[in-house]
Length: 206
Image 1 (cartoon, helix red, strand yellow):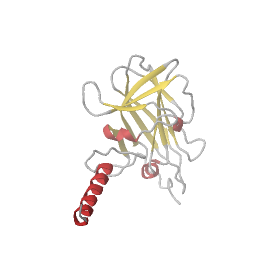
Image 2 (cartoon, rainbow, N blue to C red):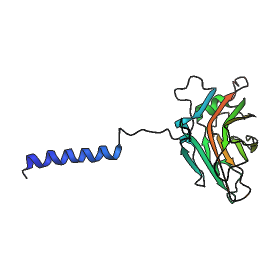
Image 3 (cartoon, one colour):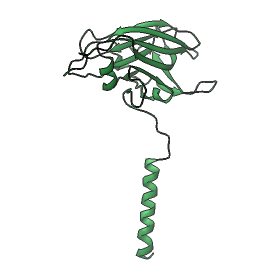
Image 4 (cartoon, helix red, strand yellow):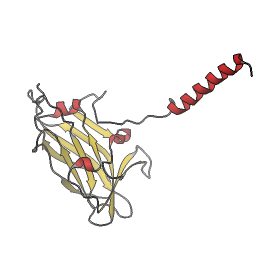
């Protein structure tokens, strides 16, 4: 094959392989910490649908994004085995709260609302939620437990976040089903975090 034919063809093939690797036409799902981004109100943020991809499994492989049997937006399915014991919410399924939200919510009372239900053959009867702020030892809600039903329901709790000063630590929200034996499964439809207390002018000062 002549050079003036070979090299253009090689360049075209190389471009095709690059495009196949990058897959620019593929749908991208959100990843990384939960942030306000283009949200209308940084004091009231909800992770639902595709935003649930921001949850990470921690040390255990118990997360899956699934489509409900009746269709609709994807939900987060969490399965926990009885031997998966941990205290730090980062060790299990959790989402990191990005610095913009952390600063907005710092030093204020917030409300966390988890919309969840029990699912599966060995469904979870209960689940726990922990809002963990790394600023100090008192910056943690502790594991709050709730009884689950087979229908999606809102489970709220309030927590006063610590002041941040000039140090941002990236807060964490952990969610886990209670598994007294074998394993238990639950689904999360949405997580809403919003401020219910007044702004704190000293929350993120340097």
